[in-house]
Image 1: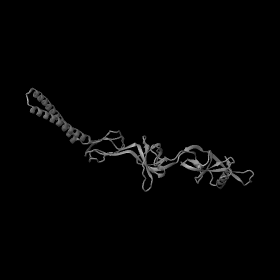
Image 2 (image 1 turned 180 degrees about the vertical axis):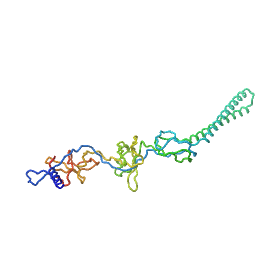
Image 3 (image 1 turned 60 degrees about the horizontal axis):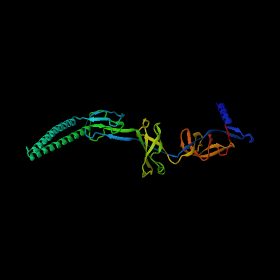
Image 4 (image 1 turned 90 degrees about the vertical axis):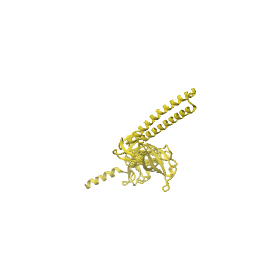
Length: 350
């Protein structure tokens, strides 16, 4: 085992360094590997954490009280606007509608008779058969019958409106997130029975720094990533920047519209938004392994085969790559630089 370790160390040393000609037998030069720096554009951004809310959310209840006779939806079901969700028992209100309907029919018959009598009386009055007083009485009775018909029709409309209040419909398309498990329970006027949420479009709510708020406008595209899952989108759009700051944090509230037609995001969960600020800049995308452990620069190799330290400003970092703005042009950089590398050190490129 000891022999194997010594052999491995010897092989590693022989590949990492090479004697420098003319510098003496003990002088060595490190060997380095270069990788391409991909030219790109980058933009400074602010990363904020917030919550994804349904774009619409409404607790729904009946306008009148009563016993729930039927429920037509279940939790998790998608419904269209106008879909029937449930209904109360309608025995009493149905009887009231029937009574009001009969009242309209009776008033209509009375009005027809009164109008007919008034017309005949007016004809007889022109012939001198009846007096003016009798003719006026007939006209008054016809007018009263017409008013009674209108009153009966109003009572019918009121009864039908009360009947409609026994049925509950979805005001917009969405997903039922709460509903009665079974009919038969009592409910009062306005008490929530169903909860409807619009989840195919979400609203991300967070706060941004006061300094960056002036550069963010409605319509700006941002990237939103789920914190607890793998969902992400580059099509989120700033909806509004509220022109007021939290009195304690001095951060400005912001709302972002997040499309969710495929249902990849989960409502009421945490998410992260990457909000671009400032103007696009020329940048490079390089492997994370090329950045010094201090994170402030990378090494290039100049024509004299010496290391040249180039300072960078990191814009975005992932597990595999770094997008950065270098202080000097970069085309190739040293991969996996040693911690003891210094500016001007002579190296050999593999």
